[in-house]
Image (cartoon, rainbow, N blue to C red; front, side):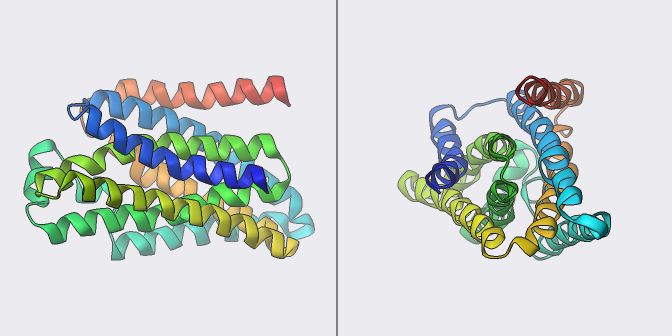
Length: 251
């Protein structure tokens, strides 16, 4: 339990860490952000498939593949519904000039922050569910991939809020709140699969589906929107390959 709590704090704290970096380095280039985000996408891709979806099939028994497919699409459809209600990063934020224009008033900035907070909840749940399989190393890889993704996400919160005239102190608190949401999500995911082992296969697949959706619908489009798509592609492959090698030698 202590490890789960520390992991939850790490996953949520990554957003806060990214926020601090956003204050310190306000002129971080899109290329740097895209490379980091793509590397995280590679880690998350490995974690989603080998850390969540494959174990889901194994734990599902006779009907494992059916349960897994149902979980994957339920997770994806759930995030798709959230996207229709509250669009996420690449749909709310475009180029630097668009950021200033789209967030010219406080209501749009709050929508931007709320969108990140809402999307952080299923990400946190995915991190917590990973511990339900009992494979601590895979669970930490899943959480690590999500944490890596949260760093650049925390960084991009700062610009729009400051541009809209929000005071630095309030900006930090709002950004930190999105990280707290992820901590709560991690604990929810962990307790959900521990209350009933029967939900474990579906929960693992659900978490895997949400991660695949985030990678395809959010992370890849975002990292390919600023002219760094080649570097982003190799960063994703590097993140995936690094996790593959790590799993091979530790497995």
